[in-house]
Length: 277
Figure 1 (cartoon, rainbow, N blue to C red):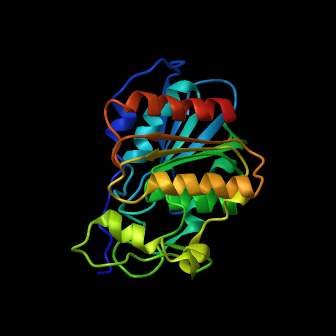
Figure 2 (cartoon, rainbow, N blue to C red):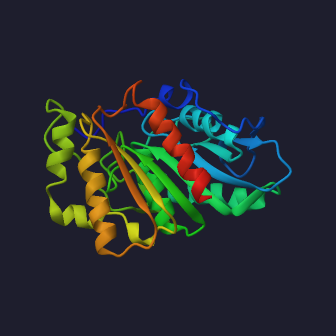
């Protein structure tokens, strides 16, 4: 079976639990730049703003990016809530997404008079962490990164047996699922990750990332082994003598975390960007 079963980074995690913020008021502005589908959350202040590019996973659309905007903007950090598929004018499925689309998001931020383009971060969840790692390793303008339930490799798209991502029109090396659709999803991913040759081809160049990394994983992840992959990334970066801080926080939950863990996770994301941008 070629199709991935979609999985969702729960948006409610980002918006339903309050914590003490600096309480900046902010405006929300629809982005009009090339074919970007995005909203820019701009805190109201006279200083230039650091900014976080935020997007979700296999749920698609603007929901997760917008939720991150509502979560982070009150702390005085701008947020570009970005959709990369399932919106009018862009791809409708998570298949063959050009990384140039994300690079255009960075280019747009460089044109904005209120944004300090030397202070750009990225936050993404689940399938979106593939794009986040690719983007941060390709473009040194990204200075800080948060990934939730991340993958260490690129995977095929949701509907075709080709990479979910392209660069310069060429497929990014990616893994496909093993077994068939009757097997548990976690087993299909786990067995695919046992193919060391293919994993090595599809592994992200984490050492090229130009800033600190926060990884948040689920120890009982029922979708893919985000906890083990995060541990593997830590070891990889240690062996590469990565010069930036790497933090890995794990929780004894499933892929979507839980209401009990939400306040701590939310605050850790905010704190990471406040301290690193």
